[in-house]
Length: 207
Image 1 (cartoon, one colour):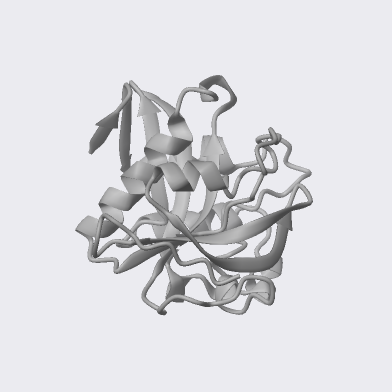
Image 2 (cartoon, rainbow, N blue to C red; image 1 turned 135 degrees about the vertical axis):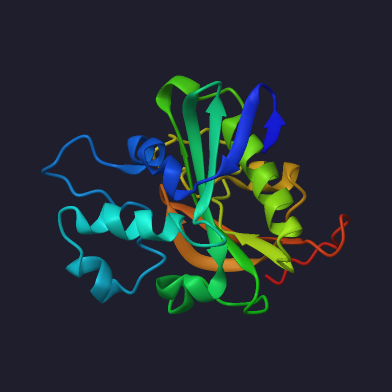
């Protein structure tokens, strides 16, 4: 467990799946939720998963090591989620035509943030990202990589900032590592990297 700013950051284990479901499940049964699987499974498998199959697929991932992400809590109330994993476990990301693979295959990838509406603007995403850095380093990851949007200083709706923002990653010690042709909210996503073998990373902008 990692405590930060009144938050407790813990792995999203199978025992905590119900809390995770409150963040990533869809309140409207007619609108199927992604369940944070879109980067983890192939497009064909993702499209095949229907009804309860998507949440059950994510539940099965929560039983594995490493888990598919970390959860943040204020007391007993779940406040946020950050999804990550070793690149080889990200099947769709491995085949992405918009995000190039610049780092070694063993790099862990951060693909999504979800913050509960009641917990926004309370530092949840930043605490989660710091927690991921600590967790990944403790579990032998050589590096972390994320694909946040470059807002150029503008404010962006949280609905489109699920990949994070460049300033969020910079504050956690990440540096620009390359460009992508991916977009969110019509803003470009960039590759940010944190070498976990060293706490001081050299700037690597390959644009």
